[in-house]
Image (cartoon, rainbow, N blue to C red; front, side, top):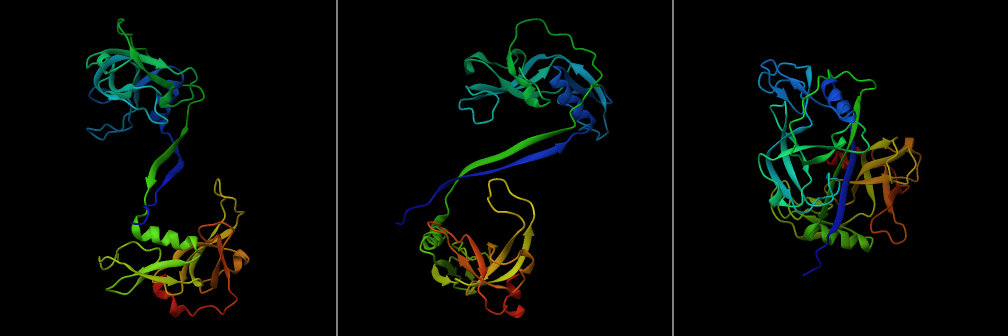
Length: 313
């Protein structure tokens, strides 16, 4: 059997969010070592606070301070902490009902092992040494045997409140392309582009998927396409991507390789960006040691007639 390809992949982007008055006060409070909840119309105190009552959907703004001590409502042991989690040694995930609150807050509890944590355990906040106005200002919870700390009377008014946060979203995984795409990648190493033909509708898929998404039948007949193709549609990129050494503006387009039944993505260069057009005939440009074309450039042929590629838009 051919070697099964696999590679580690990371999808990561920063998610920027503006905060409303309730979340702003909550996160600003953490920066100042104050835990705030919000009181509902029937007197319940919700921590973390929300802007609308989850029962009645009424808007709620009545902020009230709760204690930094509380009781473990339930827990689960984390044997292998991952990157970005609160602690780098094994710890317990806990739901803590802070004194003065009617709901529980999810966070980490720093204890030696699972035999040292239990439901009903008393705990308190361990504050981070440096606080910026984020949930990580609570470094974790720790066991506490003292008396319940009295809740304060902070109203939620702060100087220099936190108005927005940037939360990095990241997904680490291992991708295995399967038989059809492994063959496609192997062909690219030889500067060939190979698709697969559906035995029913006869459409040639590039890159191949191993099955026809229209007919639902397996594909196995390999068909070499290109190398030239036609630009079916395109966009002009004006924002430079991080870690991508390409000066803006540049053009990224859909290119229908000759003989293919659908278009693939590719960068178009070798021509001023404002001269790229639908129907432009292009060919791949390879760089030394590359496993896929660096970009596509004009072939110098006359533009393709619209009717030859309109079904591929």
